[in-house]
Image (cartoon, rainbow, N blue to C red; front, side, top):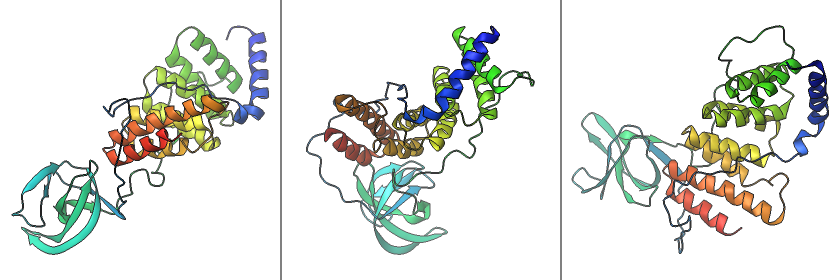
Length: 295
């Protein structure tokens, strides 16, 4: 710690910040991933596609997608494990080897149509982006990389974190900030700043945990949800990224109006499109792109 005066100043800042943190603009992580490979993210003259009532995932692949509901029908393609498909209709029951199940007419995420044998499907999985997938099994912040003195109070921990960050020692700065938040979880904005440190360190799983904590306290935060979705894209948890980014585009960006608000929403939509594409849901990406174009 560099001086008692700095500790007192930092304490006053925390005390006055807490009652107003929900109304302040959060600094955006002003970036997005473009995984679509499309021409500027714009798709024209897209056909309207009806939504299926049931979805399934390939439980054991590669699974043959056939032109008809028989093993003699031509193979259109092979679907890898965890490929998501829409169930369009149920066919007849058949025994193949030791497995007895139905044939299903399905549509793949890229619009392909065909038939698969149900023994290798997991039925009734959630629709892409429908509802909110379960968050991480724990919201507990990661432990420090090195021991932290036990006799430090939260204000001292926060002050040391600030000093370490100023020195460019981000790993230790994150450790001390996380330790302070364990003691003072009501310091909500600290979770957001902790996520920024984790982004800089490319610790995307930890950034997601910090932002899950933040959005638990600030469920209407646009930037919290946008950055959480980006963290999940980076950590390759694409279904969760889709869910939180779908929430982000429904929220008002803090501190933005007019064209600034539209630009912030377009940023979130680009992240959402990237999440859908990474989740192998091109139809969801197309629908999100249409919504973005309509802003």
